[in-house]
Length: 141
Figure 1: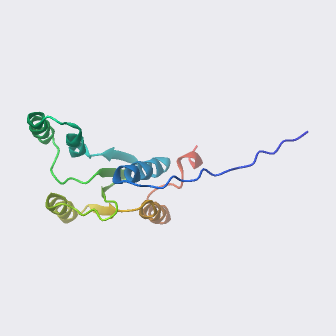
Figure 2 (figure 1 turned 120 degrees about the vertical axis):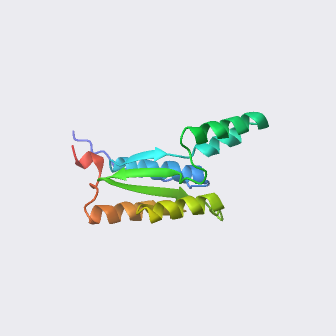
Figure 3 (figure 1 turned 135 degrees about the vertical axis):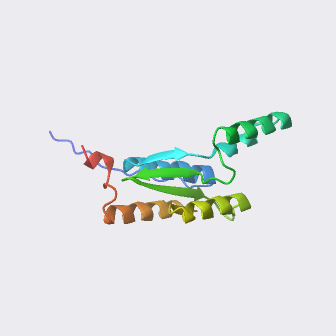
């Protein structure tokens, strides 16, 4: 007796926040062997309720190399670096974010703003087409 296993695709959960969008994009990027670094260190300040400790934490992360306005994600792929700022819904870049993204672009880096998962997918497809990344990590084995 032969049993055939039916392939079922997982239904994607709706993305309802910037944080969920970033996690979903990182998952896709890692599936294509891209190295991703989250730089969203300032978001941690929101978890600190004590005002003096917030200021200490902010000074500490700036002293350790964080830059106010830095993009949320750094992607390394085929000797290239891409920076991504995630925004969800009607979210807008702060003045610090605009200044930092402009500075990175002037230095010659690719800087993107993603508001939905489809933008990440399209970027991956464009990189596959130009040959700067492989299709999927499991295809490399």
